[in-house]
Length: 295
Image (tube, rainbow, N blue to C red; front, side, top):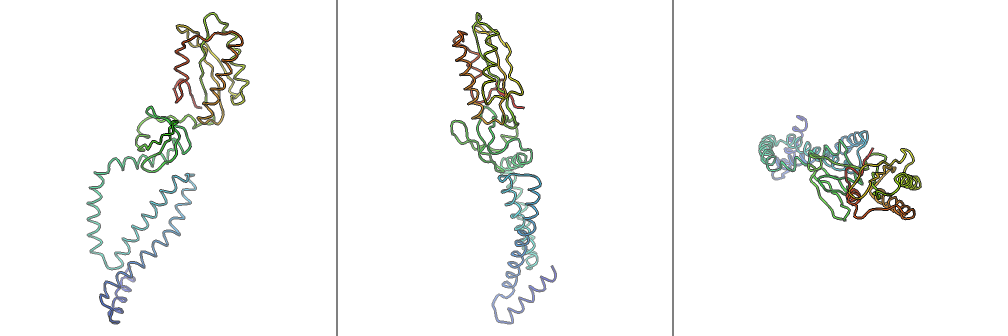
């Protein structure tokens, strides 16, 4: 640093002897710009490359890498400005700037508590990975597909094609349901039949249609159990598994499966009582806990 400062003084003297006005100010400014440019260049080549290798080793996705790289460059610029100020002979000015910056930081911190909380929550989302872009998530009565994750907010498109911009703290303070986080998904589908119908035959039909559907897994094996004696129906609950699910797979598979069972019931004169409050409740799309289980 002393050598650079001496060079700054020598440059100022040279400019002064050459008749250049404001030689001291120009000399300091030239040193400041050269040092800042050098530190920025070194930071991009060495520090940013090192950060990229660290992010690669952590397996972070593109949406997580981009803001971290920007933050790294911002820190490099800040360090470059601080060092360049000192080497250019702006020590007193730098000390005053640091005092003002500290006071401003304190004031901004109180004013931006929510922003900071969301930023910290965004960091937790990147590190804990409760969900990623493209996942179907549910929270606080909302559900949709994650389209973007930033440090402050996440953007989720609902199944009605509405875009929700959600503060990250809302997604870390409560329970987040991610039905597609695992490799397979269990669907629980209830079927109501009349009290006078053949329960054993209804069970056989439900299992046959489960085995016949190409998207329903054979292992774990589909199962069916009598779970409720309702006011107007006997409720048989089928449990089937689908592989590598998305919400579209879930809706499509369950719809086709229910349709196939209904058609078989009609063919064999198995009655589905109407109204059937059990069927109406558990087949509601959007993720009812008793209907969808991930594993």
